[in-house]
Image (cartoon, rainbow, N blue to C red; front, side, top):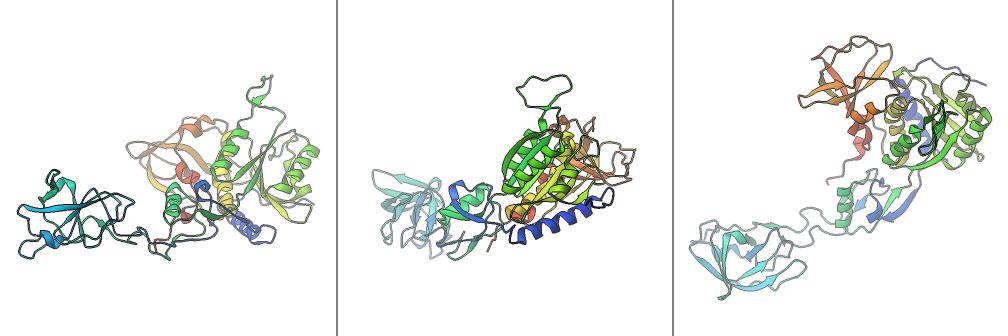
Length: 437
């Protein structure tokens, strides 16, 4: 039985529906996120399922912050003041300590040649950088030319990370810096959430793949490449399901097969109301729909629902428009937050910047509109001249989207809401923070 839908659901309402549905899906027994243990060397972009707790102090010993000489500051003090300028203070060099070596205890009145990262020997409480010294190699002595204070140029044991400290919280998407932190505490393996499996199917009898001949009336299938790249960029497993012909039975069969091995199935094209658009009826036959058609431009024919599996569980389904820009924009606004939750991150929406418009937009639309834009050196936002939903070159040119509310007009100098594409393509803001302890 077909479900009645409100026409043109507002975007904020669609976000609320999506959040509730995906969080319920994850919390259900069928949708429970699974974890796996992988090498920290291979974990870039994955989301931690278990916090990383340090078993060591970092650094593990007091060590030198630079190349120079380890000394006892009192040996260089004048009149008992460690910060007084020395007058030709010359000390014998007793030893040489490289990184990875542990030197012998430093006796009073001696100094030790020391290199960056090397442990500070017992008896030393300062390191003098070599530029502030003069070494007499033949005599085996070093002259110190600058004042010295106890503690200078020494990195203390545990000053970065203390043993037992939680350094990376569950829910954090691992960046290169995060992997470095994990390695610095000796974490060879990390427990991460398994990647969401996202099936991608494109529909349309007119679609052919690059490299094939382009017959009259056909177009190359750009959405197949774009969506695969977007899914992979989100840290999910992209499973290409090919091109489905514009036939109801073929569409149902493709959805049924995809639901069995995918957490989320996304499609492009075939979600409008034309006679050759079969996805709505196919999804209703294979599952159900939560909403159909949004009050946004581009992207009105956007669909969200679910597909049933043989075991009674469900896969999520999102149908994107066929026009390349509409498909791209709706992925960033609607699919990306869902993928974040499936990956183990919290629900998070992109944050806007308030910037000055370097353009006029006199003709308001009844729908909320997202126009391709670029931030100029003058701090003003300009628009791509052709905002058609089929002009994919505008997405390459743009570095952001201007969010225009229904009925909004713009004159140069007005403040507009700007969404940087870097923000839309990055992991959830709330999941990027590590615990600082």
